Every structure is written in C-alpha cells, then in structure tokens.
Image (cartoon, rainbow, N blue to C red):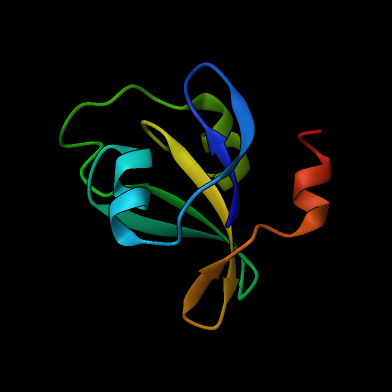
Length: 94
C-alpha cells in the first residue's frame, strides 16, 4: 500500500506491505495509531517510543497536533483496515 514515511530527517512516499511485521519494522516496534482524519487517515507510530526515549519527530508532531517520537507512517483507513493514503495527501509530498 502507499504510505508516507516521516523520519527525523525526511518525508517520502513509500510502498509498504499491509502486514503487521512491515508496519512494526517501519516504526521500529509495536504500533499504535493516531487519528488524523476520522475514518480516513491515521498515523502509525511506535507504541513504546516515549518509554524507549526516542527522539521527537517534529514534522510528525506538527501534522498530528501531539508529541510524536521516532518514525511515523501516514496511511489511509477503510473501516478497521489500513489502505493507501489518500491521493490528496500524496500530492503534498510530490
């Protein structure tokens, strides 16, 4: 699926498998979601990022409106499933 990866150094559009293991690898640990647009767009972050004292991700924090640490993924939401991030979000990163 298409997603936007936000690291501490860059933001880029990526293709990632919609599998738990791939999502965990992208954020370096267990995942949790932050709702950006209800029923449309979520940010996936590391659930234990604060406990692990990961560095703040300033760009992700601004987008989410809350303190985010480590890598973050922006993905689309379809019901209870993740899907491609909406095109209007992708256009912001092209």
